View 1 (tube, rainbow, N blue to C red):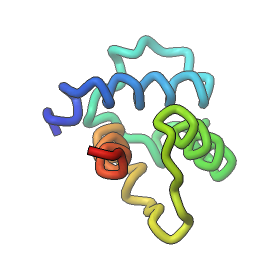
View 2 (view 1 turned 45 degrees about the vertical axis):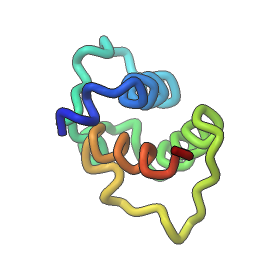
View 3 (view 1 turned 60 degrees about the vertical axis):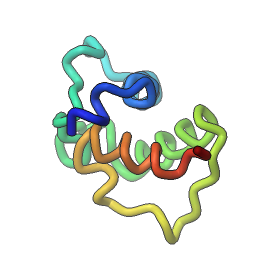
View 4 (view 1 turned 30 degrees about the vertical axis):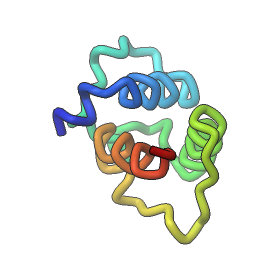
Length: 89
């Protein structure tokens, strides 16, 4: 998952997660391998909706319900890769 951790997109996704969920932790504590769903109490069903909306706004993308997968939220790295794959090249 080092590719995700080394990207500028990773930093933006990480900061969006922290600010959207109101996490009171240093950004450096969240790595690409940091678990999200099930590990962060703030990431409940409403948190997922808020986070997806914030990511759509931040990266100017539209995510349809049928493409969103719970596997995206396994780790910060998997979320970053899911967002990166939807960005225009």
